[in-house]
Amino acid sequence: MKSRNWCVLLLPAFLLISSASAQNRIETGFLDRTVEIGSAIYRYQVYLPDSYTPSQRWPVILFLHGAGERGSDGHVQTQVGLGSAIRLNSSRYPAIVVFPQAPKESLWVGVPAHAAMAALEKTRKEFQTDPDRIYLTGLSMGGNGSWYLAYRYPAIFAAVAPICGWVTPFNQWVRNVETVVPPDSGAPLAALARRLKGTPIWIFHGEEDGAVPVDQSRQAAEALSSAGGAVQYTELPGVGHNSWDAAYGSARFAAWLLTQKR
Image (cartoon, rainbow, N blue to C red; front, side):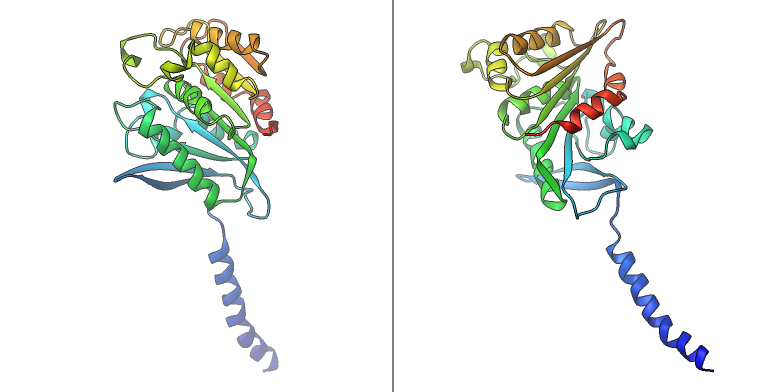
């Protein structure tokens, strides 16, 4: 009888402990989030590694998608580029990753760019993050956005990785929109190099890119190198527009990115 009584007494305590553990369990993976800019709601996702714990500071990566992932569903931007690389090999990216989404018919300039930064800031407040290990990367349209945000926030990012992006307008689609370097700043590439020469940068581009001319990345790399910048440039022989799978799938790149500190 005594043994049974002890079991009866212990059972409620065990249930209370189990309930508390369930409540304190941290949800990880790709998490839905929103941020409000003016009267507009922008959906984004935050990737939280399985190993996340608030007892330590975590690096943060802001990822900007390409034109094909624009919209308002809040999910498709995780299906191409860095999100795909994480799903294939999450151990390479022990970091918090922010995936904003730009609206249809927009670029990563102006309000969408501000929304991306707002999503980053909200993530920094929600989770335990390392202010000295905040990184910026993007592909194609997001590569252009990476240059745009890096130019405007050079003190925030510990490293930047523009992939098959552009700095100067090269066709009608990207003309008549806000440029990476404001028009009153002088020659764009020289101004970019002056502004970012202290930021570690790794540029990727496919040699046979038919969507964004490879010269865009070649010239940016040359300008940064001439200014004494900490720049690496990887041109992928025989590769077209999709240079992002090779870049984000590279263990060397992931290791480089996450070892940079502001």
